[in-house]
Length: 301
Ligand code: CP
View (tube, rainbow, N blue to C red):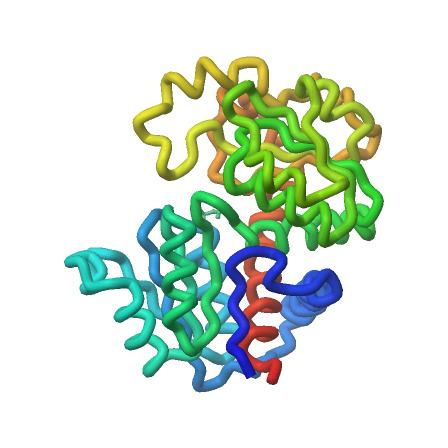
């Protein structure tokens, strides 16, 4: 049987994704009750970090520990990747020693190359194209506060980059309506948008947010945009999420941000403290959703 990877959401069926989100909630409940669950005893996850991370790293490392396994973090300076060893060779070697590999790297093609050479599951821990693990946590968080996201309206305000792309794919697989407000020149890939018949561009942040059940944003300058920070500040002015913008959404709307946040840019200074913000729970749910994913990839035959 072919090895299962998780590089982007459609690597799982809609049914499997719904199962992962439901399982994440169960694992969270078990964790809260102090119930031990160690199906990954003796298993190791290698985490290849070519870019910085707080949430992804801590969630995978803690998740492996709680599931009875072990995780090791490999930064470029620690490995021969930093000295130019081909990623395919690294993937072949890791496959001989560990049970799964998580990769955070800028170029999505690189994680695809690693997966093509790997005989163990490879997980995308974020690339320039997609951040599928974050979407598992986001959908889990919506479910936790409001029930099923199916049929809900979600507004994404900001950069048509990896988070926006992942929301587009999620809209089809979890069956919610997605409105995107991105500045001119920063819209998501039109081909990706065409994949989902429930995602659309909105003319303005207010149009996107009108009566939405969930409002989401991400930083204006992601990893890989270090040279464009000032130009992006100018381009994205008018796309800041504020309490006033959230007032245009549904009365019981939620606000999410994958973090880290840049206060004064994509969000106003105190938005994370707004009662509609569930960003801290969303961040915590990275642990439970990634545990569900690890369990799925490493224990399903
Ligand atoms: N949201 C997210 O992926 O956070 P990190 O960059 O800290 O992993």
